[in-house]
Amino acid sequence: MHHIGSPIDSHPTDQLLSLYSRLRRLTGKKTMLGHQDTTLCRRMHECDSDVATLTGAYPAIWGFDLGRIELGWEKNIDDVSFAHIHQEVLHANNIGAIPTLTWHSVNPVTGGGYGSNIAPGSVRAVLPGGNCHGRFLDWLDRVATMLNSLTDDDNLPIPVVFRPFHEHNGTWFWWSLGSPMQATDTSEEEFRQLWRMSIDYLRNSCGIHHVLYAYSPDRSRIDLTNKAAMTEEYLYGYPGDDYVDVLGIDDYWDMDQHPSSKSPTKQHEELITMLTLVGRLAEERGKLAAATEIGSPGAFASRLNNGRDGEDLYDSRPWTGYLLSALEANQFTTRMLWCLPWRNSLEAEGTGAYGTPSADSPYAQDFIDFAGNQRIVVVKESTKSPADE
Image (cartoon, rainbow, N blue to C red; front, top):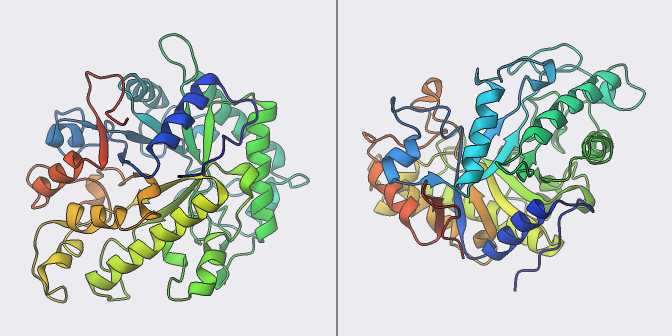
């Protein structure tokens, strides 16, 4: 029995209730394959989606970003027009996929974008009484306008998952709170106020009632060697159960080589530990759970199953042998409703942290096997709903 409550919105649309019921039924049984910008950013040219071209099916979760909508621009942070995003949200909904939205906004004080997003006092500046409070409410109005425009062919609202202020426990965004061991000048209470103020404004002032809200700390700032502290670190800045529908985690840390120089076996164990923590907390709190961003398993992960994981020898099964086995590890990891690799950006080619394989990748067949596994949900263009029940 997987106890899950109800949407935090006390006036949800029928469409949101239908989505929530669908996710509740899937919990513990299936994991949806997600992908950021799956039809908007492709390695293989002259195709609709790298995932669909390789596997014959689309991801069941489609990620999009709203960054720069706050400025009133026509295109987002990745130079994709919001009109095109609007079109692809409708496309996703029409084939039974679920849209999820992030928001890489500029700094409200300095206007600095990604890579120059930090400035002291940024969160305080947008809270009530701050000198950028009115500006930030204008930003939320623009987000709400976009959200309200997402309607289907019958003019009914398309339910979406919104993941604002993601990776807040890092130190790279203006909303960053940091972690207990590496804090910024934003306090836990200030971050909670930012989150609650934003959701309250969208619901109560803008009439947004077709959205689920996802909380997604970054894995790299959670010390899994300290069992007593890791729950506290995951919940650092948590705005409260009344303001979160989905407990997520952004985990690139456990998917590839990094300065810790841990073996694939050890890193795989920590991936399972991280997903277990998220799944356990979701069960305890009656929430949905997801791997809201997850790095693409590559050369590092493919060393797990050859019995010699300290050597540069590959078994070419990073998706099924590393990621899928973690998702299926126990009763809590199986609660992950989706796992979303990032966009297939040419700029990130070779990093091992982003995207899905192209046809010429040594991991292409393993990815096909992953997408075709009975646990993983994908969608076909010709069907309204995935085979999820």
